[in-house]
Amino acid sequence: MFRIWLRLFLAYISLFQIAEGDEKDLREWKEKIEEMRLSLSGIGEKIDALKEELSVEGLPNPILITKETQKAYKKAEVYVTDNAFSQNHNSMGNITEGKPNLKGFYILPFIGVLTSENLKWKSIVGDLEIDEEIGLTTGLLIGYEGRNFFSDIQIFYTQNRMKSISLPLSFSGESEGVGVYFSGGGKIHLNQFISYSIGAGVGGVSQGMSFLLSGISVKEEDFVMSYQLFSGVEFRPVDYISIGLRYRWLNIEEMKLFSDHYLHLLELRLGFHF
Image (cartoon, helix red, strand yellow):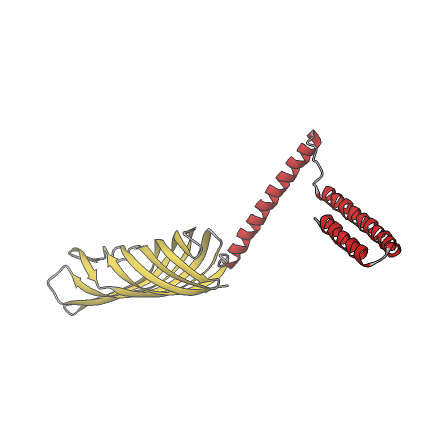
Protein backbone atom coordinates (compact mmCIF):
# COMPACT_ATOMS: atom_id res chain seq x y z
CA MET A 1 0.00 0.00 0.00
CA PHE A 2 2.86 2.31 0.82
CA ARG A 3 4.52 1.62 -2.50
CA ILE A 4 1.30 2.32 -4.45
CA TRP A 5 0.86 5.73 -2.85
CA LEU A 6 4.53 6.48 -3.45
CA ARG A 7 4.21 5.70 -7.14
CA LEU A 8 1.09 7.86 -7.50
CA PHE A 9 2.89 10.72 -5.81
CA LEU A 10 5.87 10.38 -8.07
CA ALA A 11 3.64 10.18 -11.14
CA TYR A 12 1.85 13.34 -10.08
CA ILE A 13 5.10 15.18 -9.64
CA SER A 14 6.37 14.00 -13.01
CA LEU A 15 3.21 15.14 -14.79
CA PHE A 16 3.39 18.45 -13.05
CA GLN A 17 6.98 18.96 -14.17
CA ILE A 18 6.13 17.91 -17.68
CA ALA A 19 3.46 20.52 -17.90
CA GLU A 20 5.56 23.32 -16.39
CA GLY A 21 9.17 22.73 -17.37
CA ASP A 22 11.17 22.10 -20.40
CA GLU A 23 12.81 18.91 -21.44
CA LYS A 24 16.07 19.62 -19.63
CA ASP A 25 14.33 20.26 -16.37
CA LEU A 26 12.12 17.27 -16.99
CA ARG A 27 15.18 15.07 -17.45
CA GLU A 28 16.75 16.33 -14.25
CA TRP A 29 13.56 15.79 -12.29
CA LYS A 30 13.25 12.28 -13.67
CA GLU A 31 16.77 11.47 -12.52
CA LYS A 32 16.11 12.87 -9.05
CA ILE A 33 12.82 11.01 -8.80
CA GLU A 34 14.50 7.77 -9.90
CA GLU A 35 17.21 8.19 -7.28
CA MET A 36 14.57 8.86 -4.62
CA ARG A 37 12.57 5.84 -5.72
CA LEU A 38 15.63 3.58 -5.57
CA SER A 39 16.50 4.92 -2.10
CA LEU A 40 12.98 4.36 -0.79
CA SER A 41 12.85 0.89 -2.34
CA GLY A 42 16.08 -0.02 -0.53
CA ILE A 43 14.68 1.23 2.73
CA GLY A 44 11.50 -0.83 2.18
CA GLU A 45 13.52 -3.97 1.46
CA LYS A 46 15.55 -3.48 4.64
CA ILE A 47 12.33 -3.06 6.69
CA ASP A 48 10.87 -6.27 5.19
CA ALA A 49 14.08 -8.18 5.95
CA LEU A 50 14.08 -6.91 9.53
CA LYS A 51 10.44 -8.01 9.99
CA GLU A 52 11.23 -11.52 8.76
CA GLU A 53 14.27 -11.75 11.05
CA LEU A 54 12.26 -10.70 14.12
CA SER A 55 9.44 -13.13 13.35
CA VAL A 56 11.90 -16.03 13.02
CA GLU A 57 13.71 -15.18 16.28
CA GLY A 58 10.41 -14.93 18.22
CA LEU A 59 9.42 -18.51 17.46
CA PRO A 60 10.15 -21.03 20.29
CA ASN A 61 12.88 -23.53 19.65
CA PRO A 62 11.62 -27.05 19.07
CA ILE A 63 11.93 -29.39 22.08
CA LEU A 64 13.21 -32.86 21.41
CA ILE A 65 11.70 -35.46 23.77
CA THR A 66 14.32 -38.04 24.69
CA LYS A 67 14.82 -40.49 27.54
CA GLU A 68 17.20 -38.06 29.25
CA THR A 69 14.71 -35.20 29.08
CA GLN A 70 11.96 -37.47 30.42
CA LYS A 71 14.13 -38.41 33.43
CA ALA A 72 15.02 -34.78 34.06
CA TYR A 73 11.33 -33.82 33.89
CA LYS A 74 10.40 -36.51 36.43
CA LYS A 75 13.12 -35.33 38.82
CA ALA A 76 11.94 -31.74 38.50
CA GLU A 77 8.35 -32.81 39.12
CA VAL A 78 9.35 -34.69 42.31
CA TYR A 79 11.34 -31.67 43.50
CA VAL A 80 8.43 -29.31 42.93
CA THR A 81 6.05 -31.67 44.75
CA ASP A 82 8.40 -32.05 47.72
CA ASN A 83 8.99 -28.32 47.83
CA ALA A 84 5.24 -27.64 47.81
CA PHE A 85 4.76 -30.15 50.63
CA SER A 86 7.51 -28.58 52.73
CA GLN A 87 6.02 -25.11 52.17
CA ASN A 88 2.60 -26.38 53.20
CA HIS A 89 4.11 -28.08 56.26
CA ASN A 90 5.93 -24.90 57.22
CA SER A 91 2.74 -22.88 56.84
CA MET A 92 0.94 -25.30 59.15
CA GLY A 93 3.78 -24.89 61.60
CA ASN A 94 3.33 -21.15 61.48
CA ILE A 95 -0.35 -21.58 62.30
CA THR A 96 0.47 -23.61 65.42
CA GLU A 97 2.80 -20.86 66.65
CA GLY A 98 -0.20 -19.09 68.14
CA LYS A 99 -1.21 -22.09 70.21
CA PRO A 100 -0.71 -22.05 73.99
CA ASN A 101 2.47 -23.58 75.40
CA LEU A 102 1.31 -26.89 76.89
CA LYS A 103 4.44 -27.74 78.89
CA GLY A 104 5.70 -26.35 82.19
CA PHE A 105 4.90 -25.82 85.85
CA TYR A 106 1.58 -24.54 87.15
CA ILE A 107 -0.05 -23.15 90.28
CA LEU A 108 -3.84 -23.55 90.38
CA PRO A 109 -5.91 -22.29 93.33
CA PHE A 110 -9.44 -23.72 93.42
CA ILE A 111 -12.73 -23.48 95.28
CA GLY A 112 -15.75 -25.76 95.21
CA VAL A 113 -18.62 -27.55 96.89
CA LEU A 114 -18.88 -31.06 98.30
CA THR A 115 -21.33 -33.64 99.56
CA SER A 116 -20.69 -36.54 101.93
CA GLU A 117 -21.91 -40.12 101.61
CA ASN A 118 -21.93 -43.22 103.85
CA LEU A 119 -20.72 -41.51 107.04
CA LYS A 120 -21.69 -43.46 110.21
CA TRP A 121 -21.11 -43.08 113.92
CA LYS A 122 -19.98 -46.30 115.63
CA SER A 123 -22.14 -46.07 118.73
CA ILE A 124 -22.71 -48.67 121.45
CA VAL A 125 -26.11 -49.42 119.89
CA GLY A 126 -24.68 -49.92 116.40
CA ASP A 127 -23.73 -47.84 113.40
CA LEU A 128 -25.89 -44.73 113.09
CA GLU A 129 -25.91 -42.94 109.73
CA ILE A 130 -25.14 -39.21 109.68
CA ASP A 131 -26.43 -36.87 106.97
CA GLU A 132 -24.35 -33.82 106.17
CA GLU A 133 -25.20 -30.59 104.40
CA ILE A 134 -23.48 -29.31 101.28
CA GLY A 135 -20.02 -28.19 102.30
CA LEU A 136 -17.18 -26.10 100.93
CA THR A 137 -13.67 -26.91 99.81
CA THR A 138 -10.68 -24.84 98.80
CA GLY A 139 -7.09 -25.61 98.02
CA LEU A 140 -4.07 -25.34 95.79
CA LEU A 141 -2.50 -27.47 93.04
CA ILE A 142 1.25 -27.24 92.33
CA GLY A 143 2.61 -29.41 89.57
CA TYR A 144 4.16 -29.98 86.18
CA GLU A 145 2.49 -30.87 82.90
CA GLY A 146 3.55 -32.13 79.49
CA ARG A 147 1.36 -32.11 76.45
CA ASN A 148 -0.46 -35.34 77.38
CA PHE A 149 0.34 -35.94 81.06
CA PHE A 150 0.60 -34.12 84.38
CA SER A 151 1.57 -34.69 87.99
CA ASP A 152 1.01 -32.47 91.02
CA ILE A 153 0.73 -32.05 94.76
CA GLN A 154 -2.66 -31.00 96.06
CA ILE A 155 -3.33 -29.36 99.41
CA PHE A 156 -6.97 -28.76 100.31
CA TYR A 157 -9.36 -27.95 103.13
CA THR A 158 -12.94 -29.23 103.52
CA GLN A 159 -15.70 -28.18 105.89
CA ASN A 160 -19.40 -29.04 106.20
CA ARG A 161 -22.10 -29.28 108.84
CA MET A 162 -23.88 -32.38 110.07
CA LYS A 163 -27.60 -32.19 109.45
CA SER A 164 -29.16 -35.22 111.16
CA ILE A 165 -28.56 -38.66 112.63
CA SER A 166 -30.76 -41.74 112.53
CA LEU A 167 -32.18 -41.11 116.03
CA PRO A 168 -35.17 -38.94 117.02
CA LEU A 169 -32.99 -36.68 119.19
CA SER A 170 -31.64 -33.16 118.94
CA PHE A 171 -28.47 -33.19 116.90
CA SER A 172 -25.87 -30.75 115.52
CA GLY A 173 -22.29 -31.12 114.50
CA GLU A 174 -19.60 -30.41 111.89
CA SER A 175 -16.68 -32.05 110.15
CA GLU A 176 -13.54 -30.61 108.62
CA GLY A 177 -10.31 -31.85 107.20
CA VAL A 178 -6.97 -30.88 105.72
CA GLY A 179 -5.65 -33.20 103.05
CA VAL A 180 -2.52 -33.74 100.97
CA TYR A 181 -2.52 -35.78 97.73
CA PHE A 182 0.05 -36.84 95.17
CA SER A 183 -1.74 -37.12 91.84
CA GLY A 184 -1.10 -37.79 88.20
CA GLY A 185 -3.01 -38.40 85.00
CA GLY A 186 -3.40 -37.89 81.30
CA LYS A 187 -4.85 -35.24 79.02
CA ILE A 188 -6.79 -35.39 75.76
CA HIS A 189 -6.84 -32.22 73.67
CA LEU A 190 -10.27 -31.57 72.20
CA ASN A 191 -9.04 -28.54 70.21
CA GLN A 192 -6.41 -25.83 70.36
CA PHE A 193 -7.59 -24.41 73.69
CA ILE A 194 -9.73 -27.05 75.45
CA SER A 195 -8.51 -30.32 76.96
CA TYR A 196 -10.02 -33.15 78.97
CA SER A 197 -8.11 -34.76 81.88
CA ILE A 198 -8.48 -37.89 83.98
CA GLY A 199 -6.33 -39.10 86.86
CA ALA A 200 -5.95 -40.52 90.34
CA GLY A 201 -4.08 -39.76 93.54
CA VAL A 202 -3.20 -41.04 97.00
CA GLY A 203 -2.60 -39.21 100.25
CA GLY A 204 -4.06 -38.56 103.63
CA VAL A 205 -6.52 -36.36 105.48
CA SER A 206 -6.21 -34.89 108.94
CA GLN A 207 -9.89 -35.17 109.82
CA GLY A 208 -11.84 -33.76 112.75
CA MET A 209 -15.47 -34.63 113.57
CA SER A 210 -17.64 -33.48 116.45
CA PHE A 211 -21.34 -33.34 117.33
CA LEU A 212 -23.81 -32.87 120.17
CA LEU A 213 -26.54 -35.47 120.61
CA SER A 214 -29.06 -34.35 123.23
CA GLY A 215 -26.28 -32.64 125.18
CA ILE A 216 -23.80 -35.54 124.75
CA SER A 217 -20.59 -34.42 123.03
CA VAL A 218 -18.74 -36.73 120.68
CA LYS A 219 -15.46 -35.67 119.15
CA GLU A 220 -12.56 -37.31 117.29
CA GLU A 221 -9.51 -36.17 115.33
CA ASP A 222 -7.14 -38.39 113.38
CA PHE A 223 -4.97 -38.58 110.29
CA VAL A 224 -6.29 -41.26 107.94
CA MET A 225 -5.27 -42.52 104.53
CA SER A 226 -7.29 -41.63 101.48
CA TYR A 227 -7.33 -41.91 97.69
CA GLN A 228 -9.13 -40.10 94.91
CA LEU A 229 -10.27 -40.35 91.29
CA PHE A 230 -11.02 -37.28 89.22
CA SER A 231 -11.75 -35.90 85.77
CA GLY A 232 -12.15 -32.40 84.42
CA VAL A 233 -12.13 -29.92 81.57
CA GLU A 234 -9.56 -27.17 81.14
CA PHE A 235 -9.68 -24.02 79.00
CA ARG A 236 -6.40 -22.28 78.07
CA PRO A 237 -7.14 -18.89 76.44
CA VAL A 238 -3.45 -17.88 76.60
CA ASP A 239 -0.14 -19.53 77.50
CA TYR A 240 -0.02 -18.56 81.15
CA ILE A 241 -3.67 -18.74 82.30
CA SER A 242 -6.04 -21.70 82.58
CA ILE A 243 -9.61 -22.09 83.78
CA GLY A 244 -10.79 -25.54 84.80
CA LEU A 245 -13.78 -27.41 86.15
CA ARG A 246 -13.08 -30.73 87.90
CA TYR A 247 -15.03 -33.49 89.63
CA ARG A 248 -13.29 -35.50 92.39
CA TRP A 249 -14.34 -38.61 94.23
CA LEU A 250 -12.59 -39.21 97.56
CA ASN A 251 -12.53 -42.28 99.75
CA ILE A 252 -11.52 -41.48 103.35
CA GLU A 253 -10.61 -44.36 105.66
CA GLU A 254 -12.38 -45.01 108.96
CA MET A 255 -11.49 -43.72 112.41
CA LYS A 256 -12.23 -45.28 115.78
CA LEU A 257 -15.64 -43.62 116.21
CA PHE A 258 -16.56 -42.94 112.57
CA SER A 259 -16.74 -45.16 109.51
CA ASP A 260 -15.05 -44.63 106.22
CA HIS A 261 -17.01 -42.39 103.86
CA TYR A 262 -16.96 -40.77 100.42
CA LEU A 263 -16.80 -37.17 99.31
CA HIS A 264 -18.07 -35.84 95.97
CA LEU A 265 -16.42 -32.53 95.09
CA LEU A 266 -17.03 -30.12 92.23
CA GLU A 267 -14.24 -27.56 91.93
CA LEU A 268 -13.58 -24.45 89.87
CA ARG A 269 -9.94 -23.48 89.45
CA LEU A 270 -8.13 -20.52 87.95
CA GLY A 271 -4.37 -20.43 87.84
CA PHE A 272 -1.09 -19.68 86.16
CA HIS A 273 1.40 -21.64 84.05
CA PHE A 274 5.05 -20.76 83.69
